[in-house]
Length: 263
Image (cartoon, rainbow, N blue to C red; front, side, top):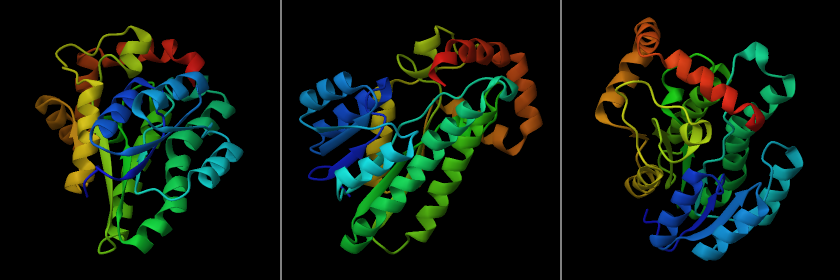
């Protein structure tokens, strides 16, 4: 389906990737309902793209419930909101574990469950789940983030099969290392040696490609990282050794330290 003329609910709109997705969808002719926790920033973005702002904390059941009640029927869901959830599991509090699961995995599932009936009735719609290549390959200091992104990928691909023949599609969009937004922009850490990055705008193009091409999976990363993710998913021991040789453990340790206040 074309994004022009659709109503899109975008979660996590106030992050760097969320901004890029919102601008790209608006440029493509979509009407946007934007949600996030930063009210002032959300309202500024809504004013910029001509959208509607609905502030919500997806980590809280009441926030999710109010969002579902207020948003009404939409044609497209772009579930982009996520917490970093970095760090060794023993260093996370029980509340940080709960919030990681709630925001990164439970909220996208709950939103899909709530919004799907009207899409199926109209025989028209699309669900896009913004995951990560961390949903295909595990890394040190990322067990909770890996868990939520592996789960999101499985949910998206399984749901896609459930929806076959209904006129509604489902896609998983998986960025690799993103510059100017996300964990590297927040932490000041550098990607592992030799690993190229992609821009938030490339992720936004991946979202549009997923909707308009009804694609099951869009991996937004340079070719070498896409190949590495396939090999790493199939051969975890190989991936672990390669990541240690590239000093990825040190990178993720620095990222997790910088993200401590965002968990």
